[in-house]
Amino acid sequence: MVRNLCPVGDDHDDHGHDGDVLETGKLPVPDNVLDAIRTLIAWSGDDVTREGLLDTPKRVARAWKEYCSGYAADPGLHLSRTFEEVGGYDEVVLLKDIPFQSHCEHHMAPITGTASIAYLPRDRVVGISKLARVLHGFAQRLQVQERLTAEVAQCIQDHLQPRGVAVVIEAQHGCMTGRGVRTHGVTMVTSRMLGVFLDDPRSRREVLSLMGRP
Image (cartoon, rainbow, N blue to C red; front, side, top):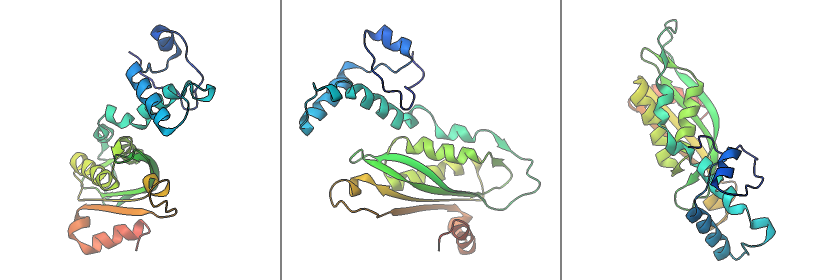
């Protein structure tokens, strides 16, 4: 079984049988997937046999496997290792402006933006980078922004059981900028508050202020 996807930027051609592909360390692509991408290229109006497009189906297939790598693991596993020795710290933990990319499930167009994730620990904390890993784990699936926001917040709540969780995501959607109304520079903002950030207006105002939001 091949465990690694092709490295980013490593798009030179693979030729030969499946055994040769495995030796390169690249993910083998089934014929039906290649045929589906060729069909889409042809339906879009281009010639799938021209030189520049000959290996595009392989590249697209591997790229999509990487874009959707979040299906391969449970993002909550990143929160399994926690720390209780925090010197009595019991204030907000916040990771701001985490960049991410996802793809919308309606048009499979890019969603690009940033997220701010905060929680109010009860008796344990997690390594701060793990919050970003949870975000990326859910983002690397076909998504809608509302669900992505809710999934990240609920995952942190379920695994850390803090006193509160706050997630705010701001993103641009390719399905709006590259097609349809073709409106650029428009961002969509979603939030999910749990625990004290939902129930206590003062705590909510505090965490939103720390995030830099009015």
